[in-house]
Amino acid sequence: MNPTGSTPNAAESLNAGRCCDEHCHTTKQETTLAPGGTPAREPERARRNRRWVVPDYGGPEAMTFAEEPLPEPGPGEVRVRVVAAGVGYPDVLIREGIPVYGSHADYICVPDWWLVPVPAGLDPAEAAIVVFNYVTAYQMLHRTACARKGERLLVHGAGGGVGTAVLELGRLAGLELYGTGSREHREVISALGARPIDYTKEDFVTRVRELTGDGVDVALDGIGGKVALRSYRALRRGGRLVMFGHYGTLVQGRKSTRAIALFYLSGALTFAGNVLPNRKSVRAFRVAKLRDRKPEWFREDAASLFQLLMERKIKPIVAERIPLVEARRAHENLGRGGVTGKQVLICDEEAPVRTGATR
Image 1 (cartoon, rainbow, N blue to C red):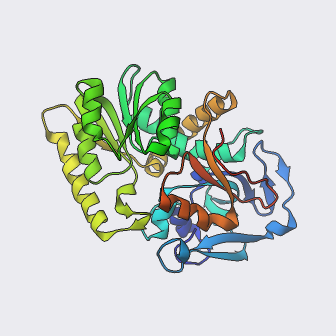
Image 2: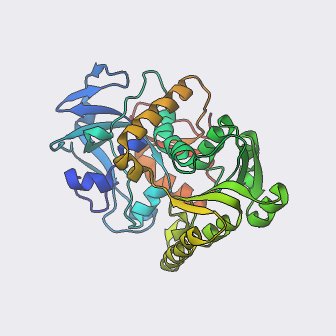
């Protein structure tokens, strides 16, 4: 999805394309490499690029479906044929005019060093979730918060794409898990080994204190704003708060100027907690920034997670497989809330489309 409606060039790809959110075939010139590295012939129907553009920022109705010539890779780039792509709140932020990474298209051009090998035989939808949601979850847990076995962890939005990944990986790491979510997510949060906290009926800080006595060691907060301040209060002495995402800038799936102001003001106040003498720490995380600083970590972590996926030690929850042409519906679903796991766009027109959450 491109905010300008123009074909992405080398510079725009960094803002309009997210290779780390796609299970993809890479292509240079006219050669397509399948997940196992096997050359494959491109079908004639794929000679043009279908993609969603946003001529004017706004709600899902602002999205326009376009068909254009294939983008040409620049120096040091490859053209990526997208098989499956996750849809999440970062894509909503792009649509609303907030600059983050995202792409809804058959093809995008990205720097060649962004690519990671995907083992043959994996479900493309599950692979797409692993490379974005699970790498995000893994790096927050182990690269940023440095969570240790037996520690207590709280994650907000525990029924969503990143939240469910955090719970699966947290359980594998031997953490004591707590997750906030709505009533609809209670069952899946419990099934993933966490104590569910219904944020619509309970104050999560009070409930965490009741359940733990003195708070959690790690809190992962993808909401921000006033919630971040309360997440800090939910920490025990020496605890670590990791802030990621911009969900708090949205109101019912739409950008809110007031919410954005409160988001950054509350964030600044939360980070001020780093100077208090309680040994609590506040850290920020963005998977794309860490990938750019430590690309070797991204490749290493993705490889480890693909191994777990092949061994079925992790089972990504696919909320729904939606054809690329219906991407607007995926955005409408996010605006309504209550999506369990991750919605995935299927870019192959011949691929079967299944509805409902699957594992």
